[in-house]
Image: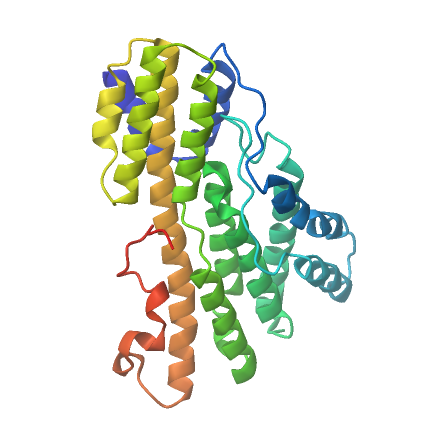
Length: 320
C-alpha cells in the first residue's frame, strides 16, 4: 500500500515517468487472455482522414531556405482534416507511440517541431507574414489529436506550450485582420474540444473486451470498479477512493493494471485542465490586444467578449 502511494505521487507529478510506466505495464502487467483486435466503429475512416497529412509531413524540414521551409510546412498543415478527430487505440494498453497510429504521431511531432522552430525564428526577425497561419494550423493539429490517449494528451500539451513560447508575444503585433482571423480560429478550435473523458471511456471499453475472455469474478468486479470511477470523473469527483478500493484486488497482475489505469486517468484529468488553461490563456491574451486597439480597457468588456462556451466556469470535462 505504501509502495503504491509513493509510486502514485511520483507518476502524477512527472508525466515523463508516467509514459515510461505505461510502456512497462502494457508489456509486463498484461492478462494471459488477450482479446482479438476489435476496431471501434469509424476507426478506419478516422485514421484514413489523416493519410494526406502524414504523406505531406514527409516533405517537412527537407529544405534549408526559410521560404521553402515555410511552404512545405504550410502545405502539410493544409492537409489537416477540416474537423480533425482523435484516433483511439484498438488494443488495451496500446499508446499512440506503439500501435498502428504511430505514423500519425511521428508526423505530428515532425510538423510541430518545425513549426516551433520557424515561429521562434520569425518572431525574432519580426517577420509576421505566416505567423498566424502556422500557429493556428499547428494548434488545430494538436487539439485534434490530443484526446486519443494519455500519451497523446501529454505530448500535445508539451508541444502546445512550446508553440506559444516560440511566438514570444509576436501575435500581438499582427495586423488587425490577421489577428481577428487567428482569434476566431482559436475560438472555433476550442468550441470543438473533444473532452479527455473520451480517453477514459475508451479504456473502459477495451478493458471490458479483455475480461470478456475470462471467467474471473474478480476481473468482472474490477470492470465495475472502473465503470464507477469513470462516472465519478464525469461528475467531476475525485478518483482516489477507487484507487483505494483497487488495492484490495487479490490478483496482483490485475490489481497493478487497474491501479496504473486509475493513476493514468488522474493524469489525464490534470493534463486536460492544463490544456484548457493554455488555450484560454492564448485566446484571452489575443482578445485583450483586440480590445486595446479599439481604445477600450479589457476589464471593461465582460468576459473579454469571449463566448460562454469556452469560458472556464463551465464544467471542465462536460460532455457536449
